[in-house]
Image (cartoon, rainbow, N blue to C red; front, side, top):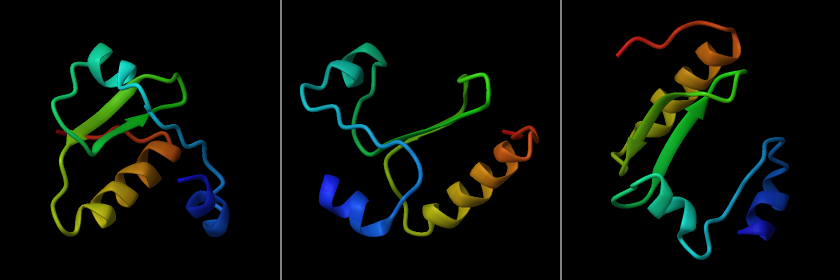
Length: 73
């Protein structure tokens, strides 16, 4: 994973859950698990699984949160 992250020059933190400790602690049923945190480090949106096209929706949500906007359900 690290070579991919480095090759993309991503400027955000990336974590791996090698022992699945986080997965168990958060009661995550399956991956991928995506969580968006606000500036207070609170989860404001989460999703398990992937549907084609999710990346655009997730990118739009991240932009909203970065601007301090609320995400509506």
